[in-house]
Image 1: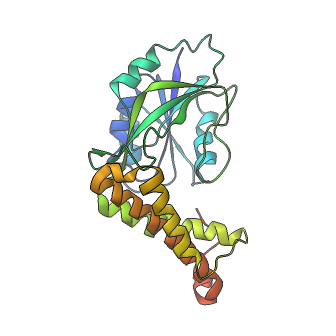
Image 2: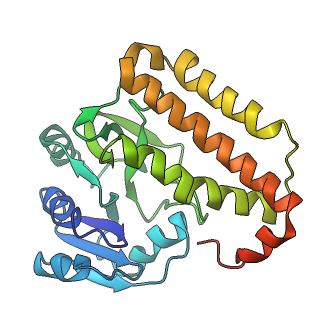
Length: 261
């Protein structure tokens, strides 16, 4: 059974070629939904035979579903640009009987990386996610963040994809401060959620304990400690920024709450 590939992109010229080439081992077409790249992402994708659809960013799940208006096949494989199929995953997909199965989605394990280091603790592995799914039966939830394929009729595949999450430790700490925490704080504020003076500390501490103790980050050495600390910083900043919105109208006026994405 033929499979369509689905990738959403924004300035992914360093990742897109390897991602497409990985997917072409199992897909007969690739749809790239680009949200306004200013680098060579689109040119590279087209040179590798992908169909590029231009779409301003709508949020995670909504954006991933845009491709379904352009795919030719019922089964769709969705990867992020910084993800790759391993040879073992390619082989596992090729052995599936998608024509006759009653399964609606297949769950993959993810190897999340910092540089070339595979982080096996802190909840970063196996980090299962549904990435191959029957679009006649299901699709990603139409939500703006943390979207997942909406089905319970799932089969786990015992093979991995690789996720090059962060290039280095600096990027691990920079992204929460620059993007994740600010966006999350704006969403919470827009929804009417409120913080108090203890919220940044308590949520940051809870995030660290969860990652380092309960998700066994202590078994990951320096990288385990680093991931736990980054989770704490992200959580701390999220609630500190929410509290700032409440306390300082001048800061609130600086941000466009109608354009979170």
